[in-house]
Length: 206
Image (tube, rainbow, N blue to C red; front, side, top):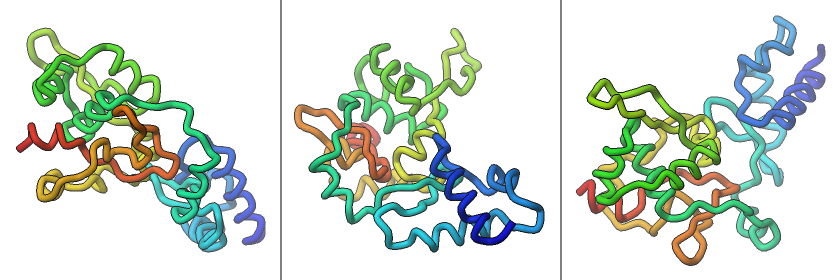
């Protein structure tokens, strides 16, 4: 297999995959003489500066719209699914406190959490069960998923902004999404910005 053939194969794999593609997955398709990391690096270089770029998210790579083109695309590309503000607040709490139980989420928010909110996050594949707390009732522990990382353009959870830094200055409501809509709703972002907790969460953390 030539270098160009390897790049074409990697390109097809990333395009066809539903989630991020890592070197390990690509190496299963390449001959042993070719390094998967080098092929991915070559593919990233090939797409640099184009309308679609290869970016690192969720422990692998995906094709994403170039950031500078996102504002123009919003004029014609609609985001059909929207998460209400309470779901975005809940997601921020889970992201920064995981693994966390439902009662703990409710304590941080200062109000009860409906099953409908959890179902919305589960349906979007942004959260998943992470075992059970060894306490009376053995409540379910919740954490974020690889889809959460991919959705918000993160390679791993260490790339989340530090909560201490977020408390230093006010940030826009629903800053987990740059496509915040009217009426307290937030769209799941196409360009996958980094998630940040809402002001309501930051006030309670203070």
